[in-house]
Amino acid sequence: MAAKILANLLIMGSGILVRGMVHAYRQALQNASKSGVAQETLKNAVRSGSKAMTEQEARQILGVTDHSSWEEVAQKYDNLFERNAKNGSFYLQSKVHRAKECLETVYQPKDQPGGNVG
Image (tube, rainbow, N blue to C red; front, top):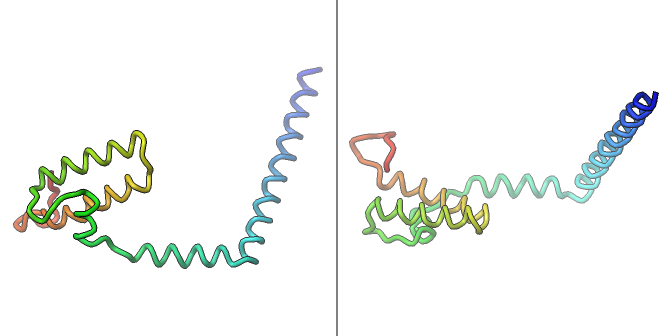
């Protein structure tokens, strides 16, 4: 008998909690649309998504020069990526990764289009 009462209380409580969360989410959406936050966020996402990293920026992030070998680039990438994975930030880690991706196209062998380097 006590188990049945406890089960009913749990079901009723979780239903109330879910309804409250749905109501709070709807209210947050209404507040965001009133203040223009949603439109601004969308506009910023589109603007930043079209901005590609330049080769110079990638070299600055990894700390390599025009004369660096691919092995040096890969070593710097591994070092910076691991450092940011342990006690850095996800943002910096993603910048390091994007820099490596950008430089892969520069170091890619000309006779192997689409091939993967190192």
